[in-house]
Amino acid sequence: MVLSRKEVQQLLHAIDHTEGLIVRLLYGTGMRISECLRLRIQDVAFDRNEITVRAGKGDRDRRVPFPKTLKHELLDHLEGRRALYEHDREINMHEVELPGALARKYPNAPCEWKWQYVFPAANYSVDPHSGTRRRHHLNSQQVQRAVRKATKELGLTARVTPHTLRHCFATHLLDAGQDIRTVQELLGHSDVKTTMIYTHVLNKGPLGVVSPLDTL
Image (cartoon, rainbow, N blue to C red; front, side):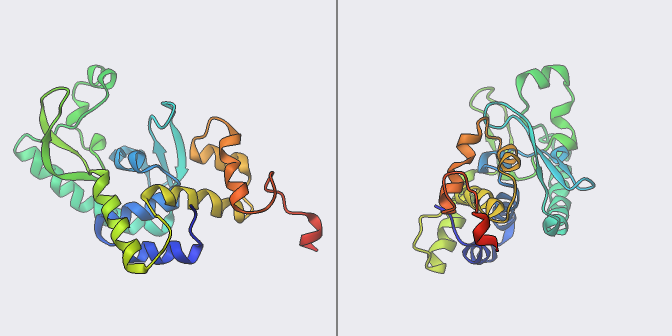
């Protein structure tokens, strides 16, 4: 399911607060919801206008464009995030989860600012694996509920989820003439055949090619 640009614009404007920032990032970067919620502070490069997605599908890292229009909104969000981190540090609750290998290699990393989640949960929870009580990242269901509510209020008949915005990202890029190999890389697809499904959505033939006659 892919929304039109107008429908995407309506949807993004209908969701505010942290959930609004997240859905705008999903459409602007093509990230999966899980990838977005796992972002760490150090993964966002404001100077290079890019975001590094760590250990995506297939356990591969990749880079995606950071929308310039979200720069000030994310900076404002990170100001509040920093205040929350300082609060957690005062009560010694600022440790975050890290993959086992990294935690062993960098024992101090779980408590450092750069490793904190960009989108933290509002409360602490107990890690089922280690039994440690700490602040995890935001639950994806919170974003899903916000998208569902906005879809209903807008009267959109399509079944829209956060993942729909990833489909829209790819389709709208291809529709604008972006090379399919570039879109493949941005989405993190290992095989271009997976990316080619979006060319069928565009109704431009099996290869997504526009006839030169239609451009005269």
